[in-house]
Structure formats: structure tokens, C-alpha cells
Amino acid sequence: MFGFFGAPGFGGGRFEARYRAMPVAFIDKQSAEFGDKVILPPSALDRLASLHIEYPMLFKVESVSSGRTTHCGVLEFVAEEGVVYMPHWMMQNLLLQVGDMVRFENVSLPKGSYVKLQPFTSDFLDISNPKAVLERTLRSYTCLTVGDCFVVNYNNKNYEIEVREAKPGPAISVVEVDCQVDFEAPKDYKEPERVPPKPAPSKPEPMQEDGKGAKDAKGAAPAAEPEPEEPKFLAFAGSARRLDGKAITFPAAPVPVSLGKPSGTSTSSSTAAGPGPSSSGSASAAPSGTGGKAGTFVSTGNRLQDKLLKEKGQLPTKPAATAPPPEETKDEDKFKAFSGKGFSLKG
Image (cartoon, rainbow, N blue to C red; front, side, top):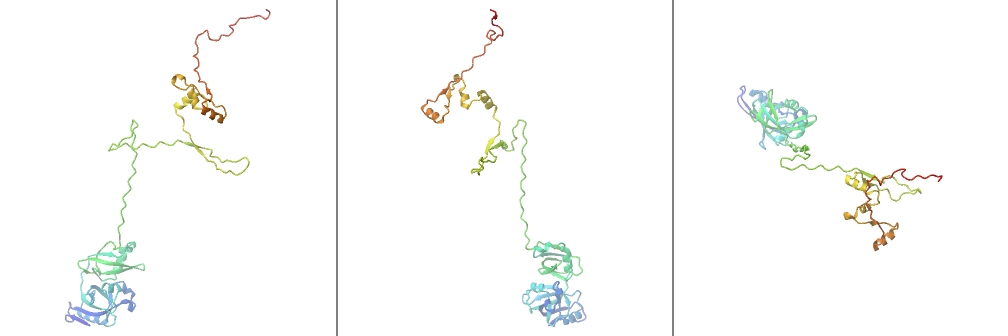
């Protein structure tokens, strides 16, 4: 069914017709899936030729059921009468089912100068050179309409891209034009969360000449450094063996022994005390005038007897040590050799 206005032989006529929409897969035209060109019947070519329509031939396509519109070009005029073959993505944009009615009308679109595109998924960003891929894809397109979603095929994978903005109008022609293309972030793109940087470790403040650490701005002194641990020696850390060759029942238990040197005070006191058996013995050597004890208990050599005597308070005590008499410095008290009387063996 066709209808047109304007007499034959004059430019500016309008072409308008209705067809039943069919996918291009029905006529085995897989190359037509990646583009915006449709296949019309031969009668449409006769009507268009008589109207002297401008080239390239562009059409406005409207779904009769949903009222949605888009724009397209024409690839061939080999379809059956009353039928138009359309790419699958175009039928999806118009919400068409197989056999739905669509209305075609010829239009003239301005050449595009700017277009903004938005990929549906972030996979499109993985393409090494998306600009070259898009330029090759748009060679199969004659026009773009704001709100349409077309397909870019690359490396046996389809990427859906939506037209977000176009200039100078909502529908533009992209045939032999120098058009600026801008990309918007994919719809499923999420910005990575920003991780705050870790604070740099604070440097220790230098020590002052007097040996004290410098205080900070608030007046708090820096924490004192922990004292280094004294080196320890593990005693009895070797392996033990029995003389009879039998296995050892209890393993060796090392005993840590501190290797720290005694202080000067304790060294001098132990030296002054002499090789006594205990510190109590050295304390008993002090004179009685200093308030110390006169003597100390002396062991009998039998621990049981010592215990019984100690309970009865009859354990023998060692007499208190007396201070040695002061050395005399007189000359007459000194020893003189050969100072005795002489005698003769003869008588």
C-alpha cells in the first residue's frame, strides 16, 4: 500500500508506505544485521525514482503498534511486496514482533557534527583501539537517532551502544561527514573505591645535648626506649646419656642463666667477706659495735641433728671474729737478725 504527494518529475515529493516487518535472517542476509539498512520491495524503487528523492535515501520508520520511531537507509529492493526486512536490533528498538506493521516515510537529515555514545557493558573498554573499531562499524550506517541502541561486532562478540546525544538534531546523517564522537561511561561501570593512604611512620626526634629527648608541640616527652635484654646462658642444654646404656626417661631441661656482671658494690662486699660459705657468714664478721650479731650458727654435718638442735636453740655457734690488733710501728718490736749472744763449742 503506497501513498505519495507531489507530481512525478518534480523534486520535493514525499514517499509514504506501510509494510510488514520481517528479520533479515529470513532471507539469509547476515551482513545486513550489522548496519541500519533495510530491504524494500521493487515497487518502492519505482515510486522513489518518480519522486526524484535526494540521495542517499533516508527513511523515518514508525511502529504502528507502539508509536516508537527510528531512521534507516535502504540496502536493496528485492523483498516481497508488502514486506520489509529489517535488522534484529532495529526491530528491538521499535518493539516489533514478526509480521507487525511499520510505516515508512522518506526524510532528509542534516549532516552530523557531534554524537555522544554510551556502551551498555564495560567489556567495550577492553578493546585495544575502540575508535578504529567504531569507525569501521559506522561505515555500515547511514544515520543515527538519539535513543537508539545499535550493535558493534568485534572479534566475534557483539557490543551494544546507545546514542545519548547528537548535533545539530536528534537524528543526523553520518554519510561522508566529519563527526566528533564522545564516549560516556558504561552503564554498569562503577568507580573504584578510594583507599586512604597509610600515614608515614614518624621519625624519632633527635636527642638534646643534655641527654633528654625533645618535647613535641604539645609538651609531651617522647617515650623512653626499652632497655636491651641481658644475654642469657642456657645451662644443662646438652644431651644426657646413662652409663648403663638405657634410654633416658626424662629429657634434659635447659636452665637460662643471666650473664650480667655484678655491680661494683656487690663485688667489693663479696671480696671483703672472703671465701665464706654464705653471705650470713660475711655479715657475722662485722664488729659488734655496728649492731651486728656476735656469731652465727655452725652446722654439725648432720642435717637431722642440725634441725633438732635448731628447734631447741642448742646449735653451736661460731665465735665472733675479732678485729686484728693494729700493727706496731716501733723500731724495737721489729725482728733483728744475728742480735743474740755468741757461744763457743770448746767451752
